[in-house]
Image (cartoon, rainbow, N blue to C red; front, side, top):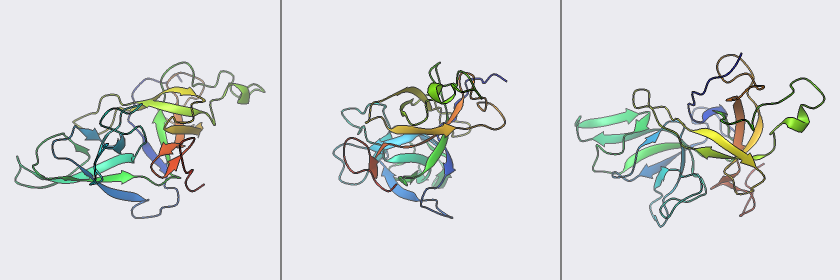
Length: 213
């Protein structure tokens, strides 16, 4: 069955070295006047921050956000100005507080995520034949596009948008995510992938320590 393009960001597939109940989540900070971040978004350190601030990641970094990831955002807590109470939320709307936001981030260097792909480079062109491995993107490095988050669900719209041999790309493709539902057909466009960190604060490839393997 053909897949349709409906990305939901990076969904945790394996917790790496971390176990229940946190699965190697860390607590970070978002500046109260920082931009919106959605569950499943890649996040990155704010350049020049001495307080561990993070922001929604930019694919190749920017003048304000590092190209090295801080992890995957999975929710936050903040004191809401509009509601006059503490709010636990699947996403940070980008405003509604005058204090730092407490963010929860999966940053285990061995964590794995399921994410949808975009473009014709990703599907296996000949499934279940001798040419399968030759046409696979497994083991290659991958770049993301942040997409558009959903304010109703708090879910990310991020997806994997390109693949190649650039060792500073933030993710590496581990496998195809084959199963049921949209994105589960690895032979057609918009297939789901299992990816791991490649250029992240605890695992950098080609630019520093390789982290835990």
